View (cartoon, one colour):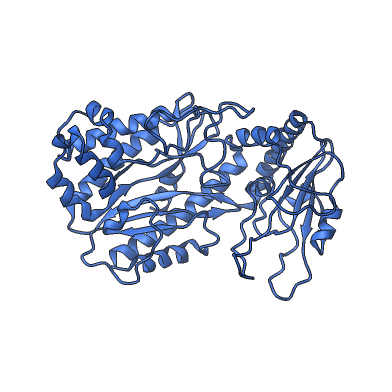
Length: 439
């Protein structure tokens, strides 16, 4: 894979240098300094949280274990990596940089944080870093004009980034297959999660986000983070939302399964899968993502009607807010270096934003799709008591078949999620393609 990545990386870095030049000019700075970050310390404790490299740092190079390191760039000069490799026998010391990308940087090894800081250019710099006490006159300023520009264009993935996201999808789908097998075998939520980790070959800390492994009614908790230790009996359903990482890039995949013999819920999954496929096929240049979200509500209403959950027409179900009770989150979000990638609401590269549609407060993206953008498509259908109880207090309650709702509540909910690339033509579905490669 490295042979394939080398020329793509060179093009990627050239793109980042051009963006950095323009961002620095926009902000009136002479240098760009980007910190890899440090692991945080737990409150009233001397233990650290798991280290996660700062996203702007890993945008430049595929280093995800480089705490205390820095990238320094001055327009017209070769970018510099100040790599912190401390003398330390308490922890594993990061290995010296190597690989297809190192020739593009001047690399300096530092043994202490102070040595690393001393290697950075002095003067008028945009310093992108977490808040920290100033060291030797260096302090994070995270200038808005620079970040607005860089974040806006991060939505447009380079061919190098897309290749890494394909790899993240291949790892994630392989692990999802293992999780499904564990579910069919009757494992607990923890057992399913452990099967996922083993197949991905990644630890919890290496995954791009905490996995959701929800059996039966737990699927109605949108961010269910607990893991049962004993198998669920009876076994009805699994909703698993879990991703994988590749050189700092994320995949975000959700699948819902019905246990054997639960044909009615399987039919509802199949109907939602058809909705999701229609939405994923609509990820095309010029499409308003917010309107895709609203369209998904109308398509969900058709499913609710066809499966006897409501008796009203789809337009009334959307207008009355009934579909929001069954589908309370957004259709998806931008994805890349972060699972919920930056600038999902950006109107332009100067920090102006596009508001969410009225009545949809949890949508994470409102931009118009353009080639190079990667978004998730994840419509859902859930049986959440708190939200359904609100509908019961409205005039629309008479058009909901509550007996049918109650019969399906033990299954929790359905979410199906793919990562989809907007291109100049038909969309590229990273998730479906990766599952297809598995056979």
